[in-house]
Image 1 (cartoon, rainbow, N blue to C red):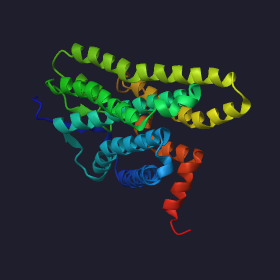
Image 2: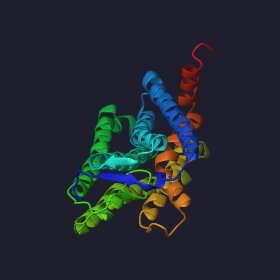
Image 3: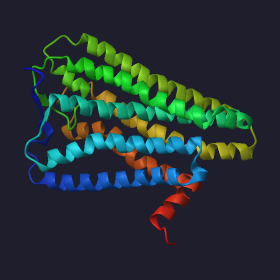
Image 4: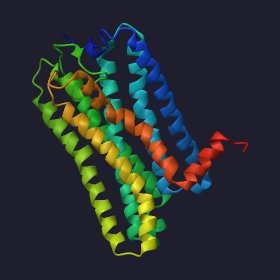
Length: 305
């Protein structure tokens, strides 16, 4: 079977009329996610007082949420609406790249947030001299290029594989599942996949944990007022980090199970957490916890009041 073939999403088979209910819920949820994240992006972009590193990074998270969900929901809704659930090899590689680059972008942005808070709390007098807009722009560019290179190379390695199967027991294109359908030896893919996991997931997580542990140590030695202000800005970031880490852990763990080892409904729910929950939760958490964003969002929603 050549690489000009099609893959078939087997989980959409035999859904019956309930697929229209799933389509309606999915469409409404997708619209809500786009709306919430667009509000955050516009609030930061339009309000000059929010042109600060922390808020710019929050808007980067929302941009990434729009990017990731755009790679997942339109395809999902199409498969729910139509009876044909096939996707070309090339389109599948692209969708896999978008979804996993989204996941790695999320972690690199959260890593920059942790670094920003560490500098703000450990060196408050020198913060503006260290985290300049120019330096922040450079960090953001690196944070976006870093996953593109690693995840992109993984996609290229998968693209060179010759396929012997075409049935995917997922609701989206999963790189590891594609590789398992290959006729060729894929040890190189497995080794490189481990390298990608370490460099794009575990290294950022280690740095993030180090940053917040150091922040906690600094706060314990500081005054009550300083500690309260530090916690006020850090707790939303930590909540977002925990939410995404748990969701990503579910996806990484689930990908190693053989089909049929766990109930299919549970498998679908766990595999979708990292692409569905964070884009919905992130703008709510930041919108509620940061007065500057909350005020501007209210103005965008009710401009005449």
